[in-house]
Amino acid sequence: MQLFEVILKQYKQLRSRGAYLQNYTKEHPMFENSFEEFDVSAAVVQELIEEYAASEREDYAKWGQP
Image (tube, rainbow, N blue to C red; front, side):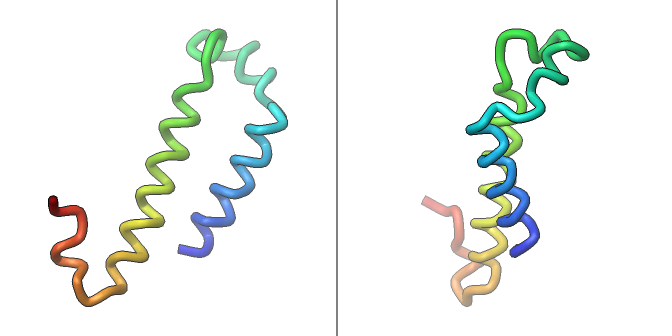
């Protein structure tokens, strides 16, 4: 879990500065107007971190249920 937390923290720092994003806008048309794909991926990693933490608790079988 710690690895994913570090990666997510680093991503957020780079994203807030706009670092390296120009490389994607030049090479990939899907990133010309939006970096939503990156943001969605970051959200997936955040959910992975949360589920991993939940899996270490006794009530994990009920995690995510309404």
